[in-house]
Structures are given as structure tokens and as C-alpha cells.
Length: 247
Image (cartoon, rainbow, N blue to C red; front, top):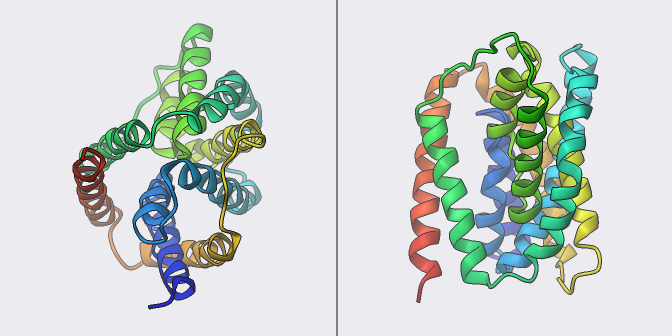
């Protein structure tokens, strides 16, 4: 199978996983780029940020048209994460590959467990400024350092910390995730990381199309089943990455 065909297939699967289970599917992008397309961990996390930015903006437009974005809350939450995202993005390229891989495996395991045991978060009606800043900064650091969107963290945090209604949490989280990823990508602009655009661009195009297919899949399969399958896949990816990271 040629690298181009592999990039198209991998992008379609990653995009479908994003569209099907909801926010958080982009976490499959890094392992796909590393293990299927031969990217280094540093290059894969940088390339993943490109994918996250494009996918977030694409999905945000649809949510905004439906009125499911709380712009003020999202911008406030994102603002707290911009500096950590930029700093973590610049730092990530200087971290040894084995450390980066192990940290990513840990986050993938956390995301998998979250999907398997997902509960609908409930806001308590109160908003703590310190908690909002802390949660936003933490999410920005994770996005910048590991190149993941962090939607599986952002949506619950918006509900519990900023009292955003669950109906608007996913759309608002896309605003947060996209802003953090864009700043993190800018933080890596001057790092010596080479991106193979001949593979990344087909991967990205297939991911965008795959995300729409994933959304159509939601109408045919229960969301709970999709989350459990996705969670199991993420746990398997985490175990595989952890096992291969250590010589």
C-alpha cells in the first residue's frame, strides 16, 4: 500500500472517529501519524495541531449556525490557556521522543477511560474565577504540549466550571480547542520540525470528509455504543504506545 493511500485511509478513520463519538476524536491523529505514516513524535504532535485547527473551525461553523456556541464563556476560557499553549508548544519539540510518547499514551488512556465511563456533567450554577483560569490554563498546556484537541476535557470543564449548558458545551469547546491549538502551533513555528506535506495534506482532507461520515454514523448507531468502542480503541492505542516507547 502506497504512503498516499495509507494517508487517505488513516485520515478518513481519524476523521470518522472525531465525528462519531464527538469531541476528542482527534486524539487518534498522533498515533496514526507516528505508526502508520512514519512521523516522529515531535512532528506528529505538530501536524496534529494543524488537523485540530482545521477540524475545529470546520465543526465550529456548523455549531455556530445552530446557535450552540457561548462565545463570551468560550473566549474567556480560551484566554486563560493561550500562554500555556504557546509555551508548551515551544517546549514540546525539545522533549525526548520517548517521554513525549509516554505522556501521550497516558492522555490517551485517560481519554479512553473517560469514554468508557462517561457521565453527563452537571454545572453547579456558580462560576469560580480561579477555577476557570486554572482549568483553561491546564487545557491549553495539554493542547500545546501533546497536540491533542482536548475536547474530552474541555466540554465537561465548561459545564462544571463556567456553567455552560450541556447543549452548548461541545460547540463552545470547539472554540476553546481551536484557539489553543492555533496559538500552540504558532509557538512551534520556529522549532526545527519537518512536516511531510505530501502526506499531511491528504490525511487532513480525508479527515474532514471522514468527520461528516462519522456524524451520519451517529444517526444509525447509539452514542453509547460508539463511545465504548472508541474508548476501547483508545485504551488499546495507549497500551501499544506505552509498550513500544520503552526499548
